[in-house]
Length: 197
Ligand code: ZN
Image (cartoon, rainbow, N blue to C red; front, side):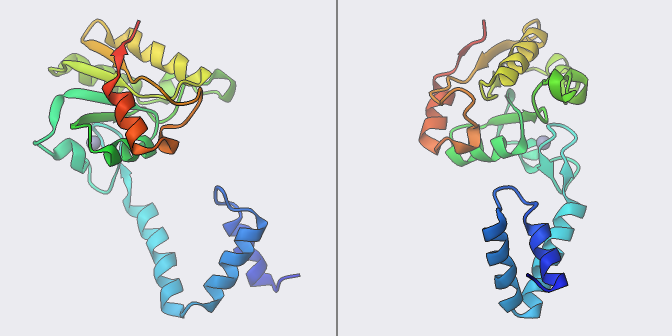
């Protein structure tokens, strides 16, 4: 149906999340219409981002520097840490402009079925952070799916000896992801946080 290089491009695009065969074909045909410099810039930006972006060594948010902008920002409240599952949740919370503390990205949720235990996540570095620094509150903002709930309780149990632990009030549907919540809902969820039992 497609000439070989075009088929390969469509095949690669289809591997992206949310891209089905139709969208992949549309994107591929669009790319072929663009000037070569534009295509070059697109390809180069993908390679550069992949090569240059790593994880902040303090909070594990995506960062091109060893320590991310949020961790380095001295205007932010360093006595509060918001614990999230993925970097995309940091981005969602930042968009609310309500939160001025720091973050910690654990990198997923505990899921024994998928072979993900606490050791596979950035939980020990979090415990170290909380036990060694003056932290007045840890806010856990992990989606309340079954795995998210397990992860929240596990982290809460480990941190309670050191500080106050709260969780955000999800007005979101069970299992709803932070990134799908609009900014107002998310800001309200943060405001309505409560003690973790
Ligand atoms: Zn950081």
